[in-house]
Amino acid sequence: MEELHVLEELFSWLLPLVIVLTIWEMVWKIIAMWKAGRNNHLTWFICIAVFNTIGILPIVYILMNRKKTDLH
Image 1: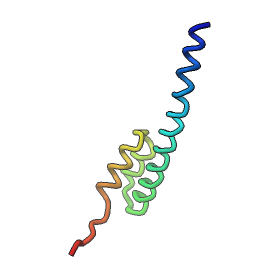
Image 2: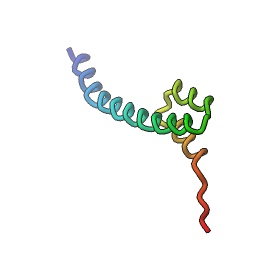
Image 3: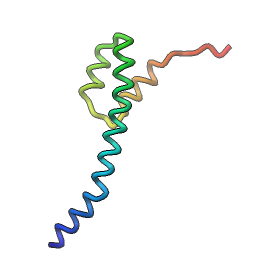
Image 4: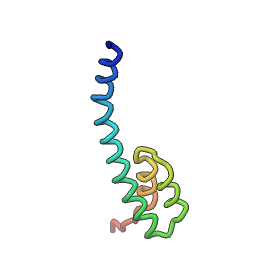
């Protein structure tokens, strides 16, 4: 019975964490895939769609392909 109690405690904080990370990944993935599609970057689009990296790959793509603004 003690093992069941330990599992309940584990899932009580693990489930909300998984939900938050899933939403985080989905938001970044949608933004990056939209930008990759508009820029005709098929390889990036496929990689972002296939690999789940907790938002790291989409953030890297967005940072690497952001428009440079003229500061002058």
